[in-house]
Amino acid sequence: KAGVTQTPRYLIKTRGQQVTLSCSPISGHRSVSWYQQTPGQGLQFLFEYFSETQRNKGNFPGRFSGRQFSNSRSEMNVSTLELGDSALYLCASREGANEKLFFGSGTQLSVL
Amino acid sequence: DQQVKQNSPSLSVQEGRISILNCDYTNSMFDYFLWYKKYPAEGPTFLISISSIKDKNEDGRFTVFLNKSAKHLSLHIVPSQPGDSAVYFCAASAGGGNQFYFGTGTSLTVIP
Image (cartoon, each protein chain N blue to C red):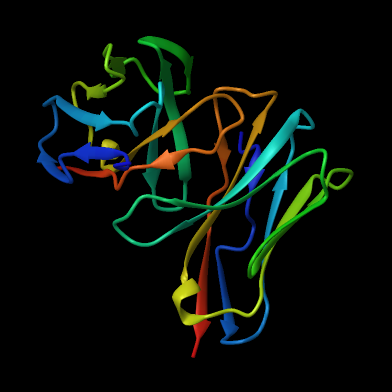
């Protein structure tokens, strides 16, 4: 099976712009989660989607949003970018509850 | 509030010796724990997991120990190899929950 695919790998934006990141989960995985990784902060949970419904949301401002399509692919959107949004954004999929997460390679976002 | 903590940001070990990475958690509802390994510019890859009904799980050179009373888990790597040099994250979830809580990571360097 193909792994979790994230596009693009790298992205450079300026403050105030918006960005959309894409994630294709492993075939058959209906759960997709998004995490933000910054130096010294570990992986911070953004949200999880299952069957097109957001099941859980982390402690991030409303500028961060996401959605999931009927084929389980997911997108994450960040509006009005701030310098502090510069981070590695990781997408992960899993088969079900109490199953391990499989991560993509991430999208490295730089906000200038 | 960081519910999963890795208090050692870095660890250096000689090749062939044992590496011990530690993780503490605060939420007594956590019942599923995982360890991930991460290389720069890549997504985390799953190493080993343990559920709260066990206190030890082994997979080759990797063993995870869980001490529920102390809310502590550790990852032992024996023998350590230079290819083990990476950042290691522990993660926890509760009751088949939709969110994993990650620690801030420990950077392991195995010296040849």
